[in-house]
Amino acid sequence: MAEPLGTIVYAANVDALADEKLYAAAFLAASDQRREKTLRLRSARDRRLSLGVELLLRKGLLDLGLDTKNMTYGLGENGKPFLRRPEGVCFNLSHSGSCVLCAISPWEVGCDIQRITAIRPGIAERFFAPRERELLMACGDRQEQRELFFRIWALKESYMKLTGLGMRLGLSEFTVDPKENCVVTTRDGIRQPVFFREYEIDGNYRCAVCCRQSEPEGALHKEDLARVLAMLPGSGDGGF
Ligand SMILES: CC(C)(COP(=O)(O)OP(=O)(O)OC[C@H]1O[C@@H](n2cnc3c(N)ncnc32)[C@H](O)[C@@H]1OP(=O)(O)O)[C@@H](O)C(=O)NCCC(=O)NCCS
Image (cartoon, rainbow, N blue to C red):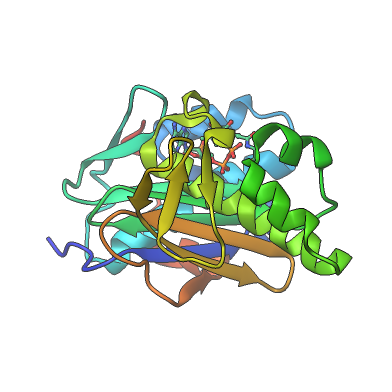
């Protein structure tokens, strides 16, 4: 089995799955649990994101020479999915707008993608730490401020998702600093040595990936889901 040497990051736009045939193929290729999850979603866009994000994971595993047919998942205490089979590979998934993100790593990893829209002041007030709000306020240019807002959001979520704690981790109780790559500071001033890597997609999305062991790979693997589907075995096995 080829384990990843470092953290590899994949992204894709799921609009291609608006095509009925491609959607049906993605559904067929999905795990049983992914299918169930997808069927519970109301909007067509959410269903495409749900199927698309698992396609990315399968593509990543395939790139490592791993057998996606026998892949099985489990769920951590707070809902973070992990692979039972193949062993030794960690992953994390995220979706936003029309895009999906998947990080695959030999170590525990967290990732987040955010579509850049309008700033939501309620989010900053409720979830950002004082230093993060200060950074935002100090930003003179509105466009820069918007970008910084989504960078901070993605960085915080990627750290939260690394820990797997979900909303049990108070988001305002730790601070990320987009200028300093490798620390998260907790409320009591303790600096956690973590590595972040940020990516942007077409100026419309900000992504962040967080890992404790080393910096995630610099290049984002942008995938075409129609191509990914063409290279996958079309069975729906395994499941969360
Ligand atoms: C699940 C959670 C961790 C992230 O949810 P989200 O930001 O809405 O969604 P994302 O698309 O980024 O991530 C969802 C994926 O994370 C994974 N996930 C679920 N629970 C997780 C956990 N506890 N830890 C890490 N990953 C988790 C799943 O793979 C899920 O995708 P799937 O359901 O298609 O399999 C959740 O805690 C949450 O609701 N976060 C929102 C927090 C917030 O309001 N932040 C404000 C800005 S700072």
